[in-house]
Length: 214
Image 1 (cartoon, rainbow, N blue to C red):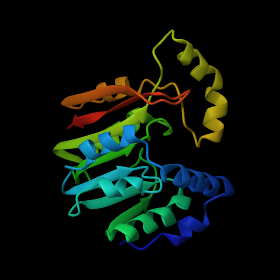
Image 2: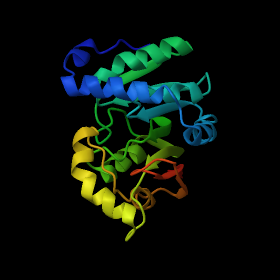
Image 3: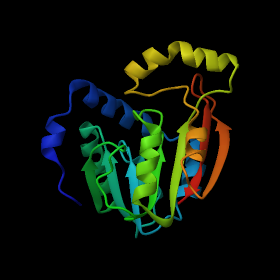
């Protein structure tokens, strides 16, 4: 395991600590709708895998034992949860503080990039995807699960627009009404496969899952 960046953890503010605690508690009970898709998308990845915004690292359990896992996490309060998850699974992990708009890895250096429920909260999704393509090896895969905007003109889309400012303020930057599927399709990947599905939850029920190839 890479040394835990303790100085970064100490810099976590009160809100970051509270959000990390809440997210870890929420992820302790996994949704079956996510479970099946994560097994299918993450279970056959190999080589070096970069996960952007891993949060409390609940995805670690889905990777093959021989995967070299690198995490890039902007919230330093998440680091202890990642370390605990890795220790419970007996995995070695490499953890970096930072944002996905500026990935601190070399060009064509990873076999896969994983992001689950990440593009909703980054400042610039298009820039994140440019960075994802940059660090992927030719033929490498970007694997994703994201909640997305409801269909245009729908009642839910109007509700998402109305509550967006409050939701973003309390949800660590989460933006409800992004058409993330379009951003991925336009990011310059050679192949994109996207499944649209819904969760039985209010407000953010529309989701996408899939993979894109460099």
